[in-house]
Structure formats: structure tokens, C-alpha cells
Length: 127
Image 1 (cartoon, rainbow, N blue to C red):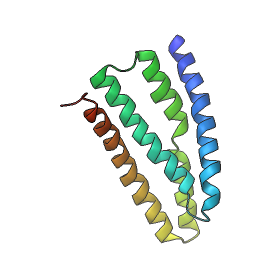
Image 2 (cartoon, rainbow, N blue to C red):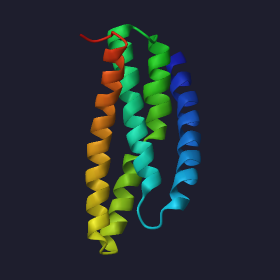
Image 3 (cartoon, rainbow, N blue to C red):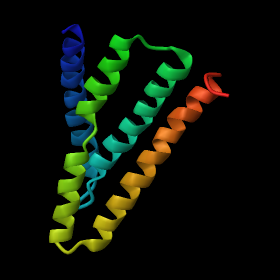
Image 4 (tube, rainbow, N blue to C red):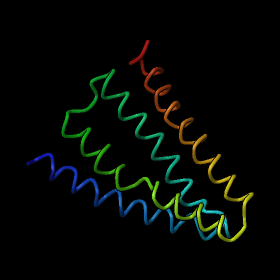
């Protein structure tokens, strides 16, 4: 039961952080959903960092890992928003922007997880 409280509290924090970051970044861009892209990439970096630090460094307790990964980052990252925004670009016949959004989100998010892993490796957690 106590893990549910950690997930719920983390979810609240992640959702608020998602809203604030998106509201800060998106006004600088017109059609391209840069706010969602930034959220997905940064969330991917932090999930890589947290999970590898947890697994290889023993850096987090189960409660902290659940709070950060499932709670905060589960509410922070935005795959459903990415899907909707990409579909809207396709509906609007903005195929180049839709393709760029798909490619950049997937490539940069995978790269960000890798960067999180590298960060843990540099700290000595992975050989």
C-alpha cells in the first residue's frame, strides 16, 4: 500500500513538471510540438539514469525507484500526447513535421536512455 502512495505523489510531481516544462518551451515554436519532444527526451534520459543507477550502483531504495520511475517519470513523459500531436500533423498534411517528430522523438529518446547509462558508467557503476 505504501508503494501506491509513492507512485501517486510522484505522479502529481511529474504531471506538474510536465505542464510547466511544456508551457515554457512550446510558445517558442509554432506547429512543431517541441515541448512534448523535450519532455520525452529528458524523461528518457532520467529513466536511463535512474534505472541504471538503481540496478548497478544500488543508488535507490525500492520506494525511491518506484517514486521516480513509475510516479514522477510515468506522469512526466508523454507518449499519448506525442501520438495525438503527430496524428494532428498528419491530418493537417504536415508530413515533413510529422516525420521529423516521429524520428526525433524515437532517436533522441533512445539516445537519452543511452546517455543515462553512460553517465552511470562514468560514475563507475557499469564495467
